[in-house]
Amino acid sequence: MATAEIPSRHKALVYDEPGKISTKIEEIETPKPGVGEVLVRLTHSGVCHSDMGVMTNSWSWLPAPTQKGQVGGHEGVGEVVAFGPGTESTVLKKGQRVGIKWMAYACTQCPACLAGLDASCSSGKISGYYFPGTFQQYAVAPAHYVTPIPDGLPSDVAAPMLCGGVTVYAALKKSGAQPGDWVVIPGAGGGLGHMALQIGSRGMGFRMIGIDAGEKEKLAKECGAEVFFDVTKYGKDADASKKLAEDVKQATGGLGAAAVVVCTASNVAYGQALSFLKFHGTLVCVGVPEGEPEVIKNADPATMLVSSLRIVGSAVGNRKDAIETLDMAARGVVTTRFTTEKMDKLNDVFERMDKGKLQGRVVLDLSD
Image 1 (cartoon, rainbow, N blue to C red):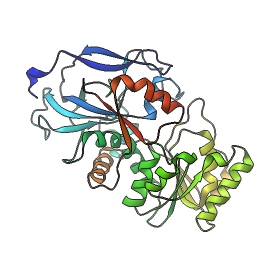
Image 2: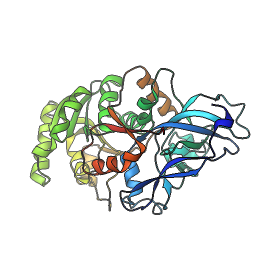
Image 3: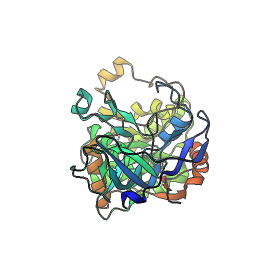
Image 4: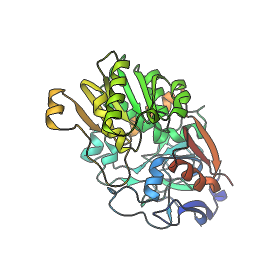
């Protein structure tokens, strides 16, 4: 697309009533890329549970409530259509497909970035939270931080990989599990969970156990779960959690799992997770519960040191993780189970998400 064809205004989905599930399509001014930036014509954007957390102000740990008129979204795919000063000589080319991630910008030079922990960048910017996100047709992005999309990987398939896929891949890497080890995925049939099952089983050689509502069993097993537990058949009290833990350990030969990667925003799941682990096992925290945070049960010093357990936090991934995830997607190791919706259906998507009715992911088609 030639620069002359770039419109002066374009469609964007904004959070018009932060604190509620409410989005509105507006026409906004198309930005011009600044120094070190590129302008991307977005064609698709994944819809993530994190978008709902930002929109509804349900994450108490965020430093400020979401501003009215915020353009949400952080799983955008499109093509480079214009360069800002200083970017023309980069490896990017006009018309090249790139992705915009949860971290819209990371400096790459601070201690966190040098450690490969981009999400903790001291000057990082989050796409869709005080930085224009990907629920729009044009977006500005730092040239050094967009992710190239492999040839042959469709844009709608690539979009959810930029957060969901990268997040679970990075988390599985941090779990310490080895090929042949058992790994438990609470939230197995959701957007994160169904990708974690695929990457863990097909890409990393783990034996996967899925935990979720019964209607998601078919999807979980298709994605690589050897064993599935219907969480609705257990209660939420201590006895029910104990029975679930016993069943998980029986499925693993009596020892327990090497890792539990919690892919659901559920305090109950976190309360159960440590009881699934074997000696020297690892709990990886991925899903962020809404409301006030709760203390993880059984994480007392005696339990932790006697069983040599670890609790690890994992927030999305870095640039290398993103490239490796998209490579796995291009090779067919992981595929996204998704449905495609137009921009005007986003409120309905969030309503279904809030009720736990989504299986896999939803991708927005950003075309007119």
